[in-house]
Amino acid sequence: MKSQQLVKTAARAVAILGVMVLATMLNGSSPVQAQDNQEVLPTDEASEVEIGLRISPVPLNLAGKNLNLVGLGSYIVNAVSDCNSCHTGGGPPNFNYAAGGNPYFGQPQKTDPTVYMSGGQDFGPTVPPATPGAYAGPDIISRNLTPDKTGLPEGGHTLAQFKQIMRTGIDFDRLHPTCTQVRPTPEPPNCIPAPVDGDLLQVMPWPTFSHMTDHDLDAIYEYLSAIPCIEGPADPTNPLHNDCG
Ligand code: HEC
Image 1: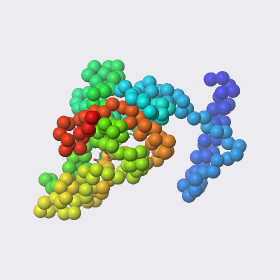
Image 2: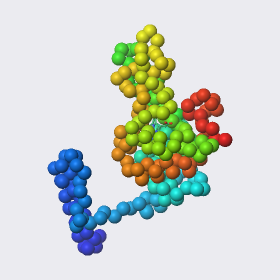
Image 3: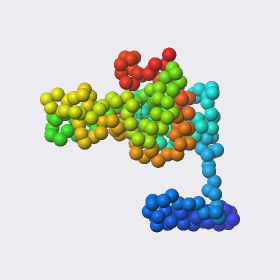
Image 4: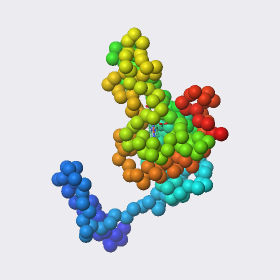
């Protein structure tokens, strides 16, 4: 590193530290105000877009799409948030990777495009039953996020709904409502016993994703609209089924 660069980097580190100290002092009571003399931190979005477009493991339908948003979305989905590790339809031994492309086996990394983002990973029940054999509720299964024949991603949800999902965890499909009773028969069907709030998506890291910017969520949605549709199970009543048209 050239000495000039080193000074710049050091100055930037001091500036960031200053903001962090200030933020700690304010203890989140009010947003930190930008200082007039503060150097604007460079955004690396152009390189993120470039990486995103390069690493997408599936061909992209870019017709009518904003290329920069698609690229940024791919970067967030494939390089940062690991959405496909949970939302893949692939099982053991390679899960989201193609045969011969499993990096954990020391093989060159290749994601399996045939199950990419199509859901179906089973995480078991939300909470272990209080007593052995007691009702635990349904298994939590990741959803099919690929676009359907309307072109809308993740089960035909709009951008506004997608943002609400990512910010609040709301389950618009109501696949597992909270039980109104557990004995003698759990009601309603497929219910989750309290204290779990069955209106909220479980396992899905929405509490973390809720902090993403609007721009990031726009980008993820644009990317998820550009990936190929995967039909999933042929049974149209299966929540993982997607109508590819
Ligand atoms: C740790 C595993 C995990 C990761 C990582 C993950 N998800 Fe999920 N996601 C799930 C599960 C499980 C569900 C279904 C939860 C349920 O049924 O309660 C879900 C549900 C969703 C839903 C709701 C779908 C619908 O039809 O309503 C969306 C949207 C979603 N995830 C998007 C994403 C995106 C985008 C990312 C990456 C930025 C991501 N998820 C990363 C596990 C995960």
